[in-house]
Length: 224
Image (cartoon, rainbow, N blue to C red):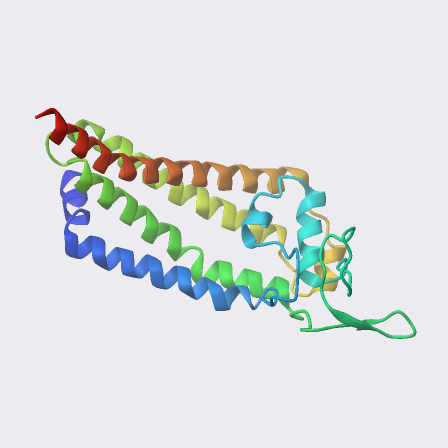
């Protein structure tokens, strides 16, 4: 474990992991456009994080409805959940501008499978390596190394469990009509949100530990 942490803590390895994490994060931008269009004229469109933290079937379905545009007002309306510009025909049919992504649910699953299983591994390795280097977990503070490794592994597993639950919830769902007609059981929806919450809590802990290091170093210099 110490050898692995020491390897991850090398500057060149940390830099490589940071670049890999950044590239993977950037790739999410075009991938998300395969779920719902990113357009400044669309107001109130939920993000993937909203879906992760849905907690209930109603909210989970509600975010899918907004991505599909089915519940969005075509004109500015303070009472509407979202505003997606469009033209209303005489028969009530709305033509959205830009149009919804026809296979948005399938796009969400493609994004999850192509990017969101590699991403947790990359940021988990980066987090453990960074904290190991900053706090000397392969040296004088090695007693804390198992905690850092365990926390990093927990974040990775929580993220993967959340992804797997979302894929299970959307199994056989590739179009918006299928998404809005499907049933979403309460337990897996809540479980996915719980795993997402645990993941974010652990990552916040890593971030706070990284931010605390310069504060501690500055305090030590002042006390000398």
